[in-house]
Length: 125
Image (cartoon, helix red, strand yellow):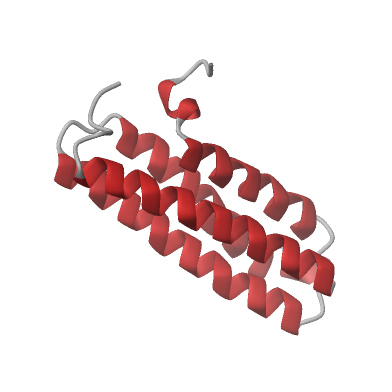
């Protein structure tokens, strides 16, 4: 069991794994991308798990769902950066597949968590 309640949410766990993957891969991006793609990619990835964590403590269904929707938007932003990273030659095809799989797993868990909120299954600590 995690120290913080949100750590027990599978969507947060998958998002966290995705962030770690993004960080590992972007460490190898060209230095000139430090303030460009690397920074944008990392910020969008962090936003996924941060919004899940922040939304976790919100009391109302609409408020929780708003944060989950922001997380979903950040995930879509990351999916664009995955394609861009591949097309610029910054990642290999196997790394591209790894990122795609990690983003898909995160998306599935986030969708399930949203459904749980909608059905009143995720409104308690």
